[in-house]
Length: 416
Image 1: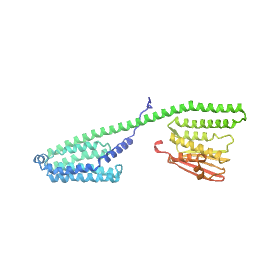
Image 2: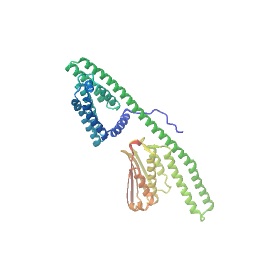
Image 3: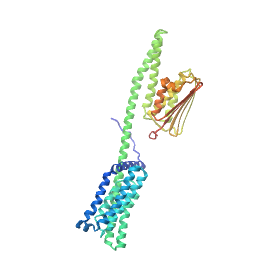
């Protein structure tokens, strides 16, 4: 069983707001469908029909066609906002502005229905409370939405008090306004708390997954080191021992090849184990390890000049990217040593502006890069694949006396 690393989960308000807006955008895309507009059309048609009934007109105290015109204002705002969602997208700032204007239009329409009635104790106040509940369910822009909920009843109360001289309706409007504000605040706090808990849950799940992956990688690294690594080392020692006994016999070349391949296997295993032990590596550790592996050249190796540089030595690099950088660096140095017959090799590894740049330059005999990659010479084809699978770019320029290989790897923001 995997245990989650101890320590509190740090969640910022900006992260919660980002998650809320993303979920709100997804919900808007789902709700802004033609079927919703059909519902509003049916609602507008139903308003005058229902108000033709005597009991409905007596209860609401409003002319059917006036009510239809007021509801039509809200319908126009909804249609415009839906079209904005389809055209600009639910994540766009234009759509965010449109939804705010839509909320204001719906609020004004509801209050218009109340004011257009014969008295202030209208059943349309129920729509106001429902609207306040819906606004509170979206936990962002609290000042704007809260202002809509609080200001509307005050305006209605002022109209009833100063224009109609209806103190009772004005007081009723203020009372409903207080209830609406309380409804909005309660819903807003609950929605915000729920959003916070959802973000916290996702962070915990991500930490648990990362811990589980790290545990699995550590186990694989141990198995490689203790199992395969020990076997390869034993194989190399046995090959050397047999060569010592055999002398310059017929099997000497084969035993030397076995020893070389076993040593190469140990080298590859060391690199794999180093990467697997940590899911991410700090740039300082990565650069130091890559340089140490590149310096492990034979004693008759050419002169090697190494430079490294970085804006932030603590910058994190993913394990997969670290492995590719290491492999490309090893292959480039190996090609310069084995194929170019160079006397001097310049090796540079830098990280600036979210880009890792690896440069290997030698003064060897040169080659034709396109032909070498076509036939797979020196593993250059694999180097290009490793670079491009991370979205990087590989450039090779070669002529007699100078060969330069430059590989760039973009560092994704999530690996910071």
